[in-house]
Length: 123
Image 1: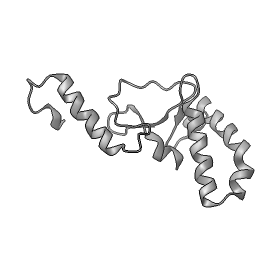
Image 2 (image 1 turned 45 degrees about the vertical axis):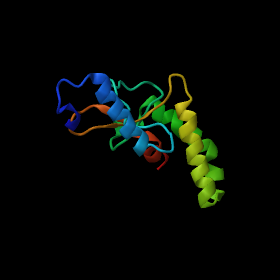
Image 3 (image 1 turned 90 degrees about the vertical axis):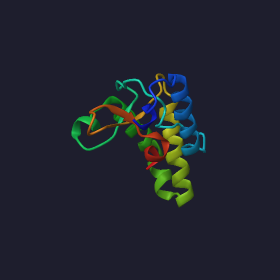
Image 4 (image 1 turned 30 degrees about the horizontal axis):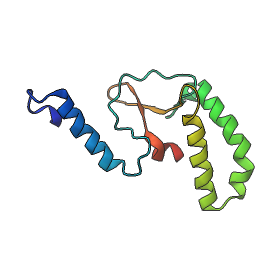
């Protein structure tokens, strides 16, 4: 992209710029979708976002549904703040699985999976 203007810039230079941008965007120091990403292949713990029954049948989506079912009652009875706490906790639990679960969305242009980051995940 725009970073590649000067060919002679070492890739580590470009990386530095990239990461600093990520830091600014990601001041909460949460998982950032702007990390330099290698090609993502969904694992059994990933949550596949987006329309389509195929995603919902994905094992990771099943696991999340099970986790969420366990919190359903609490969630319904919770204040807005409590709800946000529960969704944060669910995202956390997915991220702590082995291998770590990610919240992935297929980029419509490139067709590649991308991690949407925690904000979107909690939605």
